[in-house]
Image (tube, rainbow, N blue to C red):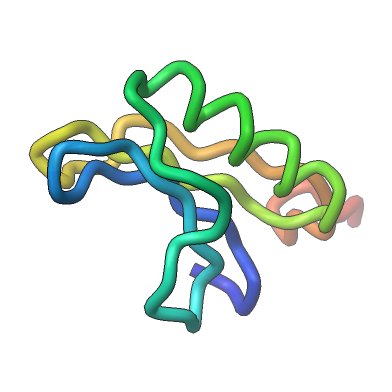
Length: 75
């Protein structure tokens, strides 16, 4: 993950979001993955970073880039 990317993950019975490089989740724990993903997406869009979404078992299920994606650079 690049510095500041947002990760949505499951921990201690709750869905959470955190910024890469930090140990603490931001916002409240979410009871559903959908709620956590929506909040994580909003934060990633605002910061123009990647949003990494993990399944309950910790496996990455999806990645979305909201800016500065090196794979989309023309040329």
